[in-house]
Length: 281
Image (cartoon, rainbow, N blue to C red):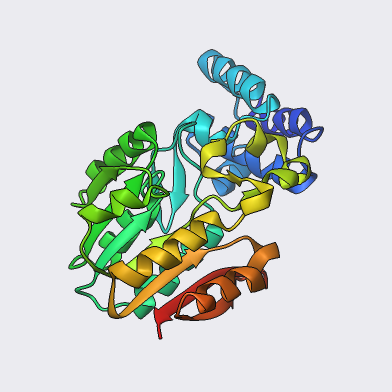
């Protein structure tokens, strides 16, 4: 089988599960992983024959991808902010809109800021901030011990020193161990349970529900807690940055304003309400 035939076969294997563009993108990533040739090199050498071990790897990847398993979990790697992060089923796959949140943060804050990331997952947010602004002091927390193991692995990989703490942020008693921060950041769970039916199989069946979903009757629970935390643990002139559910932008904005925070709603590159930046009034 040639490189081009392998690509076409894998793409055809995936179009039943993804649209043609996504199937093509996944097939390209898989073939590049198998052959170590980029797209241009594969066009030049499209009649190149695959070795038996490459064919075996192709079959394994095809079987996994056809289950809907995200390719990032198959390769244990996701790119974020120009950095490669280890990911597994215990953490969310970093998204481009979260990268936009980091860009907003690093363009706004003081280079000597103290930062806390609430619900850190893979650690992509705090590690990216620390890499971009080395003099920040960064703390990252998560309720999942397994997620913190992934974050620790990524911190070591990228050679950054961040404090990682295992605690349940929703338990206000846990806040007593903290002083004040210049920056509070979070990409918390914000998808309603009712939205599950509208989501792709590769998210619902493979990514951790603990990091994704909230109860329909209290969808803003994390933002309520973050706003309350800010009242006691945010320094004067400090900032709160959060990623939000695009369908609940106005409600989330109103919640922050009712908690004595001056807040602004910020759209992502797709024009969706995606971020809130806030300061104490």
